[in-house]
Length: 109
Image (spheres, rainbow, N blue to C red):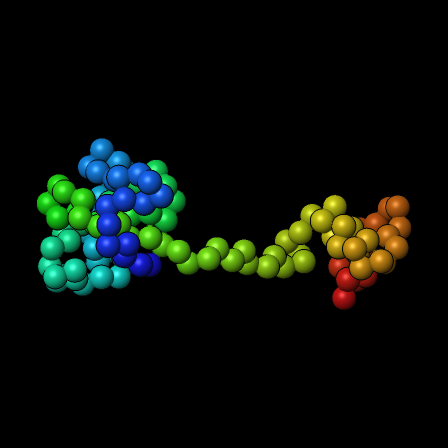
């Protein structure tokens, strides 16, 4: 997470009307006294990953969660037969017309 040092992001000036719920700063991993002790709560917004730092009921900064989203790889056992067949076809492996999930998993191993 990083602070912008501004109350404006991508041309929009954020204010109290943009708040969608409050949380204490400790829920974001910050301790009391963070930001010079001025921020007493952090508020969510409609924009995913954009949070407002508030002093009382006044927005004083914007906190952005710019951690890239990485999708966790799925286990083969959790995939559907159709997904397994697609994987096999991408690898150039011929798939019989009638096949069980166990057989598909065997072909992939």
